[in-house]
Length: 383
Ligand SMILES: C[S@@+](CC[C@H](N)C(=O)[O-])C[C@H]1O[C@@H](n2cnc3c(N)ncnc32)[C@H](O)[C@@H]1O
Image 1 (tube, protein in one colour):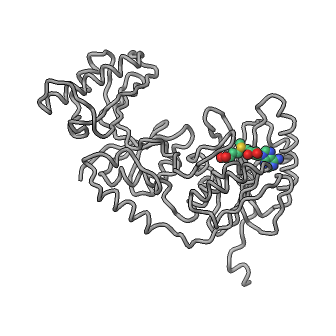
Image 2 (image 1 turned 90 degrees about the vertical axis):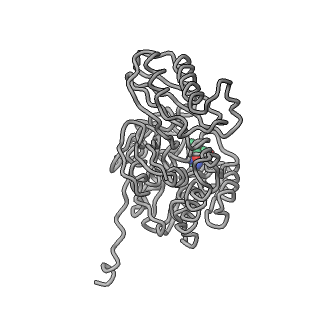
């Protein structure tokens, strides 16, 4: 088994959660803006792809160095051990980005890195001619930040938010990685009731169900690194067997998603079927103001409309008010509402216990948290 420097990329604000997940998989890690760095063998690549719920993708760090000139970028890229990663028939497109760096022309950086990799490979594989690039995909990235070039190969393929269950979606679906993050930021446990009153395409309830039953989010999809000749199929088989063993398919769940729009309820149901939760998740058409329950100590997570569109603001703010009135009756429940509306607490009618800044794509939002009463401990009943 080899040893690789791995990077799990994270959306802004989710780094700590991704790091917690990486540590839970058994890898020590370092946290920087937007990325969590750790080292591991081939099985770490497979397990990270399969298990990380809140990371965007897994990359292999081939090298990192200062580069102030194109010459430096070329020579230092050529000096990296590309033959360790790329077989002779590899397809290796190069993408790039540059922030606050002397080398700001991304297209030039990409071309130089490509040329340097080709030069290295020609020497190693003793070839004069072009590489046909007919084999597996190794997408290289050159990322320059303050004149430091980080050169990586993408090991995920499609982003990790693509779990493979979403066949249809509404207008503003939440990214699966953010939906999982919201669930992990709450105090929800699988034995507590759960409601998403703005379920849309069902992303939050489906992610909650996967967390509740400890199902690996990547279990039903493929990853680009499954096609790489230096990761044996057994590594992937073992990682999938481990995931199967860890899943608690018998864990009962009480998860409900509701939405004002019956078309969304239908889409959520279809996505739940795709995700394998047909009989486990319940969806219902309902307005948030009508939510009532006799159950206790549950968790509500909601991603309502933000009222940013013209003409929508007033109605959304009225809806926030009605939501506050309905939720106020559920004093044992904890509620978590994600919105970009800075006056949310005023409309909801109560200051939040805690707020947490999060980005929904490029929209700056807050997760308004209203903590419910703590459930009594078992021996409190016995007193
Ligand atoms: C931002 S979307 C939620 C997206 C969802 N998290 C997903 O991943 O697909 C907001 C949802 O709230 C619903 N909605 C709007 N007003 C509502 C109300 N008064 N009561 C319940 N649902 C409402 C919309 O139909 C829409 O599906």
